[in-house]
Each structure stands twice: as structure tokens, then as C-alpha cells.
Image (tube, rainbow, N blue to C red; front, side, top):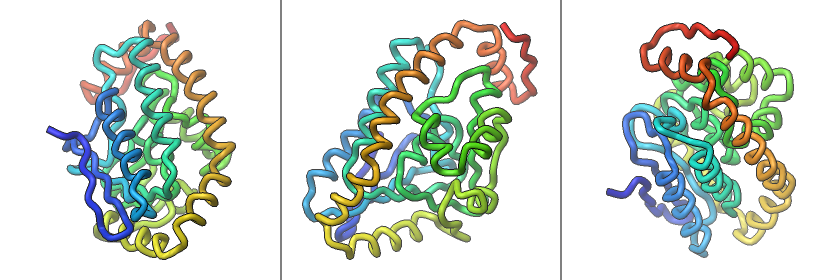
Length: 248
């Protein structure tokens, strides 16, 4: 069964992740997503992309079961391929965009969130280091101070608060996917070659910075995989209880 579906709507491609209800990602699903975006890039008639997901949540982050250092690096190779997509992307966020799922949402140019959506860089609450290029994309999106707050605390941010801090661009009262599609169709009325060249110019530094950050983030995450705090963080998350960290 395909983990990613592509639906063409005129000049817009709707790229949907299909691992409901939580849409956790792993190497295989990110690879399929990256390949879908590459196929869309090759379609001359497509000018803009809506990135969305099937189920309750946009993306609840990485599947960390049995992950090791090599696995982390392979995952981030696929993540980097998503950042190199050439056409504008609008992420439609229903439910949660958590951890790596927040990183995936921030790989897009824009985000439309449901009122009940929630965003969280919850890594420190798992005894882990953030990833998916968030070292770069989160400060660029909300500023250094708010990025520190979100990364240090791991707290959740609702759709309206995310809008107020710039973490998303619009809030949809009902279905963020439909509003994202309308916005994408408006963007797609622009000249296609102009869209490609403008986006390339705007993201040139971002892509280079994300490439370096992914290597640093993967190394930091690999170091923390073997710690007691990481095991405690995962156990507490599964058990839906507050973690008890010891600093080791």
C-alpha cells in the first residue's frame, strides 16, 4: 500500500501522507514523500503543492522504535530531499504537528492550521535533541527567543497561538486542506517560471543551512540515544505520564 498519494487539481498537486491516524514517519515514508515531490517537480503543469495527511493528525513525529545512529542519518537524507523540492508548498495541518512533524511542516513555504491544531517541539521532554532542520527553520519562522521557548519547554501551541507567533500563516475554522487548496490555486495563477526562480532565490541560503544543521542534529541525537533520560522520556510518553529525568 502506498504511503503517499498524489492528486492533481489543475495546476496544483495535493500530496497526501497516508499513515493514519498519527502519520508517524520513518525512512521509508519520508523516502516516498520525497520521491512524490520529485515527481511533481517534473510535471510542467504543476505550479504549487498542498502537503497534507490522512487521519487525525498531520504528523506526530518520527517512529523512534529501534532507531540507531545510522538510521537517523538515513532518515535525514530523505528529509533533506524534501527541502530541495522546487515548487511552492503549503502544509495543511490538522491535529498535531509534533517533533519531527513540526519540522516537516516548517519545510513548507506556508502553513494553514485548524483551530484545534497543535504544534510542539517536544524533544527535550523526550530526553532528545531536536531534528529535521529545526535548528534553522524554527528561529527563522518565529524568531530566536520564541524558538528557545518552544525547544527548551517542549510545550504545545494551539492554532490561534501559532498564528500569533508566526508559526502558521492562517487558521481555518473547518478544513485547512480546502483553504490550502484555494491558496495554492491563487499562487498557481502566477507565471510558473517566475515561481521556480523566486523560490530558488529565497531558499538558497535556507537549503545550505539545513544541510549543515541536519548533520549536527543527527550527531547530537545519536549521542542521546543511549542515555537513561532518553529511555525515560520515551517510556513516559508511551505511558502518558510526566517524565522523571536524572541528567544521565
